[in-house]
Length: 189
Image (cartoon, rainbow, N blue to C red):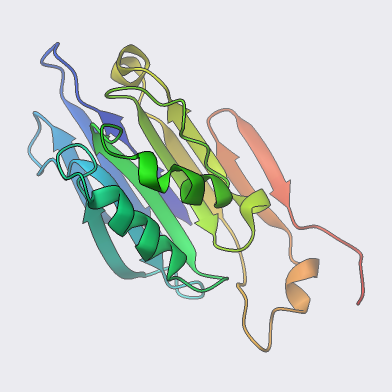
């Protein structure tokens, strides 16, 4: 089980919190005016697909670093298909995000319309953008009143043994108020 929440900063002095939980355990926490560090920009978490544990976390400060989006793009492009990712924004992710927008879109997360201090979060399996579970708040005022959040549960990822069987495993994910069912197929090939 993967749970994640992103947040946008605000001028109202309201505390905002972001987190990534894997199997109920917090592996990352961030906050605006709260007790955790800010971790501004875009945070990328690579998750082990079978144990649902954190492999690594990288922060890209796309609010203050003009080269952060290029590094984010290159980081995402360097991952292999089947890699399970959680991506969560914090504070202000959009100022220098332009160079990574196309790559994020190819993962199933169109954030090109997210404005200053908007927020987004998603869980994706690289190479399968249709299974991405995604939530965003385009504007600061929206992100101030409700942080975007996702919850995803899945089985299997690409590997030599299970790739063929993946077509028969139902992926269920929860986002906001809806349930989605992914990759349920009777195809044998």
